Length: 372
Image 1 (cartoon, helix red, strand yellow):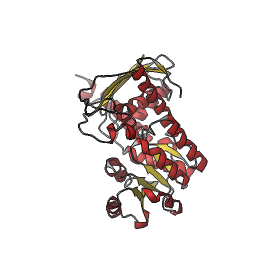
Image 2 (cartoon, rainbow, N blue to C red):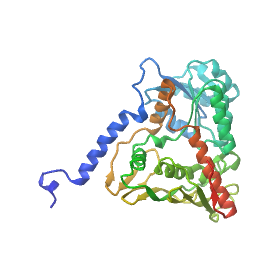
Image 3 (cartoon, one colour):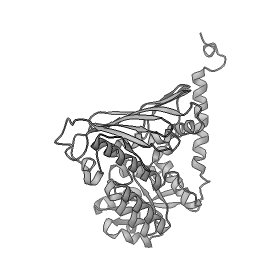
Image 4 (cartoon, rainbow, N blue to C red):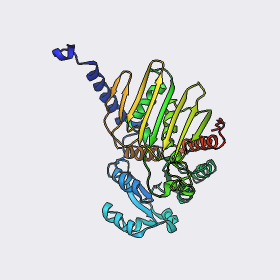
């Protein structure tokens, strides 16, 4: 019988849980150096593209934000705009069509445009929004080529506006704890990483249209493992990759993109990440190991909520936060204070460079050097 069962000191597991909650409370109080919100100034956000992610995640998140709010929408479907105006009490003049996007330049209600279209369309709309003088958040993947990433970065710099990529997991408390371990090395440097992210895709949609998506599960799901591994390496990118596309079970459906792909990333210190991503099986796991400890995201490793994470020091039980709200609030704070966003365009470009190398490795069967 342990001490905790006798009513004495708390058990190790309970103690660790209490410490986790205390750390999380401190983390949520001051995410990435955020200042106290300016009560008289909240930035207006316009969502460009009103698909499932906007309707299911970003719109609801903007009801919770403190530094920004939903000020308008930009859509190719007027009926969607009208419905959003009703649901979110938006001004009719703040409902735009893709064709008249440039008119937002004259709208002081809108400070930020969040581009939520298929990846191949991100560059066009991000550049147009920047030229209209608005700060930009681009959903990930940033684009379908490194060249397009460069165009987006250059356009935002020329317009003197900020650019962020939708890396919401930088604000998730579990992933922030992983970054802390990577930075402080209390488990040692993470040398062995494994990841598996996939879901069963059964119908034709833009995610398997190579022109719009740039690829299949590697672009849509594999990017999470790519980015997560770099987070676990304290922001360091891999120096080389290998890749192998598995035979297709549904060749008629996946006639333009891969169905399943295995890949390995090699890091400068000798660390490796072995991973698989697929549109033909369901998984969401990520494990990282160091000489002195490990973290295992056993379930929902990269999703919005419900993360299950064990560590060599005990289980993590951190409060759930709205990742999207935290991300948009932090970007608004960056705009208000002038500091740099931790999820800028250079991170998006880096990940597309890595993914491009993985595709090249899978195509050629060779180990490919990564230049970021």
